[in-house]
Amino acid sequence: MSNTMKASLPVIRRLPRYYRYITELKNNGTTRISSSQLAHIMGSTPSQVRQDFNCFGGFGQQGVGYSVELLHSEIEKLLFPEGKLRAVLLGAGNLGITIGNFVLKESTGVDLVAVFDSDNAIIGNKLFGMEIMSFDELVSFCQNEHVDIIIACTTKETAENLAPHIVETGVKGIWNYSHFDFSINDESLIVENVHLRDSLMALSYRVSHKECPHIQE
Amino acid sequence: MSNTMKASLPVIRRLPRYYRYITELKNNGTTRISSSQLAHIMGSTPSQVRQDFNCFGGFGQQGVGYSVELLHSEIEKLLFPEGKLRAVLLGAGNLGITIGNFVLKESTGVDLVAVFDSDNAIIGNKLFGMEIMSFDELVSFCQNEHVDIIIACTTKETAENLAPHIVETGVKGIWNYSHFDFSINDESLIVENVHLRDSLMALSYRVSHKECPHIQE
DNA sequence: AACTAATTGATATTATTTTCACAAATTTTG
DNA sequence: CAAAATTTGTGAAAATAATATCAATTAGTT
Image (cartoon, rainbow over all chains, first blue to last red):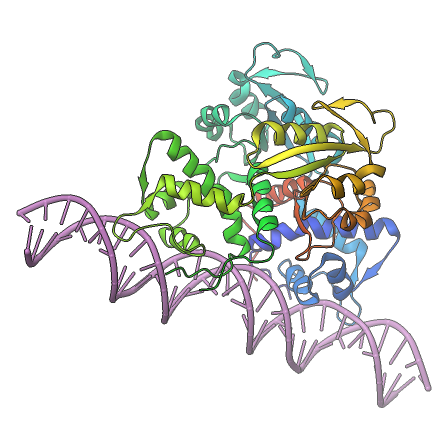
């Protein structure tokens, strides 16, 4: 039955939103939903909803719709098939602390297991109940403790310096908040960039060019 | 000469990255660059670079390439055509403080002019040298002080409650960190979502399905 | 038990985005 | 100064993504 081609990046990026809304529906006590209802909530089209789910074999039943319970558990399995991922935080500054807090309190599926920084003044201090470690210990820690992802909240320069060692750590992905673009974006190491400045600039462009994008010649 | 069709969203989202790298080149003292060199830095193709710039009329010279100086100033004009945007921060919690700091210290083109929160315990306190105001004052402040964008760092619930009043404020855009999806995403009000949880989940999916996306039937 | 309405899964079509190909313009070289 | 080497701008082609269509399936109704 299952069609099951590889899901494209646009589809993957919609999965968390499906999960978000379906979790809400589940908590509401809704048990069944149609592609059109879901499309309405998502601001997309019924076709897209069905097409998206069919990338993974299709979770619905013709004539009936989708079971919210089933959708929820299937998408959860897609997002976190191997249980929780183990993450380490690089950079215990303002941003690092905020993101670390977020991961600890508001994220599903990811455990924060260590914090690293370059500043000798704070190494050894406790953060989130963990001792802040030196970057010197990063590679061996990751190798020994089975770390899945690195959360990079450092400066551009620090990220740049660390980059050559990242491959040695054996991690599978980087959640990157630094202004440095980790170029190793192949199958062996996936980089998810959260470039706040870029996002703000894109908003600025769109806000400034709402009407009158450019004069047609 | 200028082709000048409306720039598509993918093009707009690449603009800040161009700006980032071109600023670096400019600071390096590089004066000229070709589309292939720039493509190499950006991890894209020469064609795409040229096509992108041609959305805005094309900044290059045949046989020569692009002037780094000119590219920099032209893209800057595209991103911030009306000078700095005026922004207000909603939510003075952990995330709000971090993002506010970021805007004050690391962003180009955006000024933070006020901070709002719902918590009576902190209203009146100073943050970034500004008195934290109550949400009750939001609409009138925005109307009187010509605010361009709202930075939403509140809870989902607070964002949901505020949503109906956002149109009244007259702002042109929302930089949204809340888990609430502002649905009014039309020409009159542009929403740029920074859904950290979604981004982390997308990373989780990609990390977990690196090899073996799904078995081809 | 047959008929109607609803709804998915799958295929086809359309739209969008990226890449290719080449003429036009410029610089460099012999 | 002509020829060769670059390199952009632009229109065409290819690839990708979104939407529409419709047969197949199910639930409900009379």
